[in-house]
Image (cartoon, rainbow, N blue to C red):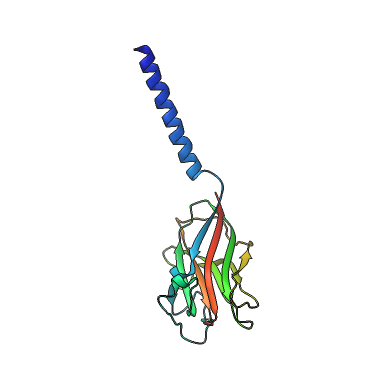
Length: 182
């Protein structure tokens, strides 16, 4: 009986240790990349800027996502994201097919303060931004920013979101990645 009790105690300890190790690896320190498909972004008529960067009204062509890019959309597009408290943003990367040599597409990582008493337009901070340059017709390219402002996430006081600003239909966003360390 003592052997059985000892075997049960050892088995229980081993299972508990394995469970705890699994929990630690899932939530432990490290670097991870959050990836967001451009087709999931929500079209908005204006952007976080005081004056919209696009002279024409935004357009949307639904049903283009499974063709490899967010096609035929212009204007501002936003996507809320959730950052883990205390994590540090280290990189913003934008994947796009830019078919226009004269017009670029921009992506912004923003945070908005959630507090009483602020004017509704206040509390925004551009944490990072990058944009396309030059043009190629069918090949994806990536553009990166590693100079992150207010890099440590604080979801108790801020909401976080990504914004794509696309002023031409010939700019085809593919996706955005945010790299964080915990």
